[in-house]
Length: 266
Length: 267
Figure 1: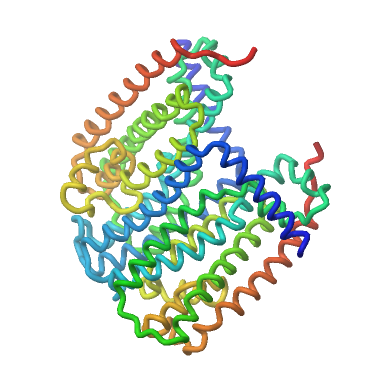
Figure 2 (figure 1 turned 120 degrees about the horizontal axis):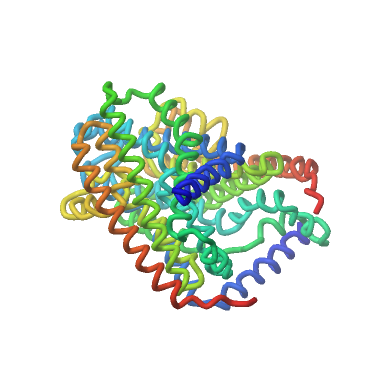
């Protein structure tokens, strides 16, 4: 049980670490609100032209925009979680110190990332979402059960998001320079999570494919639960399955990487 | 001024040489830069796969706005986009190094980490603009043809002013460098969509307060023969160069004020 307390401490540390940067948080809130405003108008024009596009009405589309802005930082959809630091530690060799610790590498970074995500959800997410809900017509559920299910999807989304980024970060063991990988992660995150356009608006086969990829667990699935468009249990199953697959793959890659790692310098 | 340009050229050249040491990495990041912005346009294409017009504008005309905005922003980003990293230098005190060098600080900061890979964005914007020019039926006049390059250059100037003002703000804000993104990337995104999409108050704001509308919306409306946003007279379509000069002058003042207020972290 002792190790459980260790990871709780790492979560709390991650939370407090990000909470230190108040000006940066305020700046993030402002930026997310501005981008939300721009997107909301384009979505309103889009749904004006074609009501019930993708099965959403206009209020649902507006809610979707503000949800996206609210959880963009928390889910690190465009990157920007703890993986940047992990990549740097792999590149410089500092990761050897992490491996020396009496803690599991993956769980350690997962805990740190969850702490970060929890803070960014509260610190960066709540204000843009409330602003959007007050200024524009939104569609929010009235019952506690839906909100509860929505919170569960957010926790699962954090696990999936970390699973993707941990795999990418581990590739640094082989590639050394992670810049290109970071760019590609950002690209995939924007496109496949539904941040750019809700995935249910994607046409034909392209839509069928992106909706099944892990990125859809980050934004599209939680949004569908909040908007009452998806069955919560099926969503949990989808997100849970991807979390298990990705974290399992991360564990596998980690054991391969740590067996062949050569630490530079002394 | 001459000093500044010389310093900018030397530092920029140094960064290009250092980038070219890793040609494969350069090719990859340039392609990524191209792809990131191309994806932006794919988003618009996806929208138009479901609708015929957006805010009353068909795809080729939105592509016209998109291309112009991307190219104008791309040039500004290529020239001085690195200035958004100033907050970091203020925070860790490395700005001190620049202050003791015998070259204007603005030129040094602007050329810092000069990234040629940003050509990717310009190429992508130019491709979309090329498509738009073949697809839109414009009644060309010499005046309209002249307005095109003027529009791109003035637009780049206006975005440069936003970058400089944003950097000046970072002397005060330090950690809050992300605010700048709302105006630079946010502004470029805003201008990719037709003005008719947005609320009247927002259009007013980016015309009279932060004059981003002069980058594309106003001159493009004239070239396309569409009604001017906010019912403004036609001559404002030719105001972008003046607006750009005014913005650059104002941001220069802000930069000086910011630099004067700089207190080193003292390490």
